[in-house]
Length: 229
Length: 196
Length: 180
Image 1 (cartoon, one colour):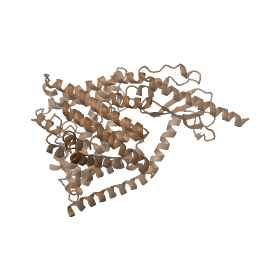
Image 2: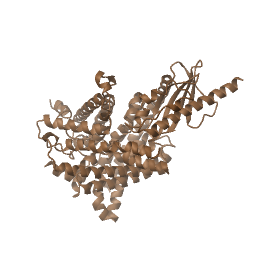
Image 3: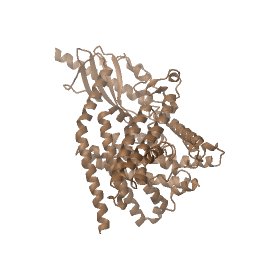
């Protein structure tokens, strides 16, 4: 039961994209088509699960002082491995994700989960947490991409949709459409969730640098924290 | 020379890192609330982008490529950037405390800013020469600055408006970002035709 | 002292282990990546020149500037020529299939860095602009208009197609000389 909760919190209650608002860059950039979104989601989930497992396994070995560099090295290594595998077995996906594939390294979700969860919990729980978060990320990407591809290209997974195909709104697949759809989705989540729309100011708590920047007085994150109250 | 100008202008306006490539969205949404912090953050980003390119470009060309170690690119670049940011912060703190006071706080935030890693990798992918890579980094940094400063203006206007309950906070910010990025689309044709 | 040494040793060890395992993955995947690239290249050749079943690379003559690789299809089906031109956002690589009689059968964009929504209207592999070149000859392709708002991209695209025709001409001339 506990495991189930641990898994499902990443999908709904603490959805990394729509509730915690982390990993916005790949969400906006790779959600132009459903297949891209699913590919990105799968790659990130893979990295997330393994990075959580590794970091949790090494949590007693890694000294506190160098933990962030250690996490970055481990994550970057995993991302590179995934990148090579994608290049080898799914070259088209590599082509369409382009720069965003290596940039999984700096995806806040991964470093965030390492710092907030994997460094404090056992290997099994961390793996489940990583998997749940990954599925949540993929789901949010899929939602965005479904809306953008349907209206922007008039297709779904590459299949044509009769009427929309000739009346597509191509701005949806361009940059402004990305911001717009993301804004609408978060507004919808606010509307239908039982929580007060309080969490929706920019989520600094999840940011891996939060501890560092909360210390400095001038910190911009403090501004965001004030906004929260 | 024309090529350098085109690289510069397109990095600032057309392939704007924030508004069209979606890199560095986190600081764009998080730090753009006040004009002062928006400007401080983006100046720090320009600085780190230039330093990072100056450091990673030679590493790629003289160390990784000749030895067939191209696959280590991601891991080497992110470590170099992280180390560089730390180093800059330490040096700044020691020798220019005033500058550290105004910019230093943004430095740790930049390590995980995807715009910085993005610009270093793109410089290699696009096959730029060292000069072109530096110009591209400067342009990308300036583009980030422009987007941040413009957007902080937009946000201060939103602040005083009456917004539907569920749109309060982030959603309206994102819708505003959509409109800001729409305005940047207009630059596309302009610069293409300037040099056509 | 121990406080300083331990983090350094742990970090160095992690770096070493990660790099070692990456080297292992690289050795395992490098041949697969190469094979996948090879396969993608050959399927691109078939896409632009449907009649040809096998292709043979032409190495014997110097191609005009901008033409990177040229392949000859079997049974006088035609030629597949890869050209590289400077587009708006960087280099674009096109694969052009020219039939034996000198008409363009199809063009495929291999790589490009054009702006999404602007230059991409020219280079996208399902763009109308691309289709307008099908069936043109060396004399006709220049008459095709550029796409408004994406002048540099379309000019570069046309230039690439021009280079492909030049390369075709050069290859044919060389073949005639050899035949005589």
